[in-house]
Length: 227
Image (cartoon, rainbow, N blue to C red):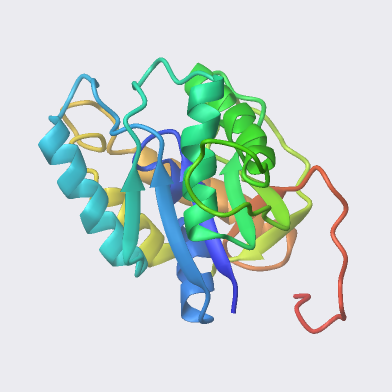
């Protein structure tokens, strides 16, 4: 079974982009670890304590036992050498076979910076003769999930069937009560997320799906996993 590391700029990014896939991979026996680069604060609603509680509740819904939060500043995530090393140390500790990170095109500067930062951190993870903690490690593949602010069509490398997981995915996202509520006018976003997943599912003749992009080619060992 594989070790999986999912990295989001903020709490809720992983759930929005690939909550169904996280559920599916966990059910298949893979170990999924979540890494939030920031605690999501400051935001118009909520407190650091509330956001942390919501993130842990969402992780429980997803069946994820470990969620790590780094102290990068929300709204000001930057691709710096120090931040690369910080993420690389997590990679060297978790030793994931696969990384799932943000897509590289986005209106949100944190998401764009997170993508660049994590791709660089993957490379830094294998460096020797360094002051970073842990033994060198290099994940096999990087996949980019869809949690973008642009109204943008991305060309997926593959679409994961999450027809059986969509309900629990939305339940995990709904744990972020400070962010998805009537007071903020954001409660309807849950339906929007469901509709987007329905669109991707329709492309593979399933009810719901989540798209992923890989900069590298993906090889198949056989046809058993195709839907």
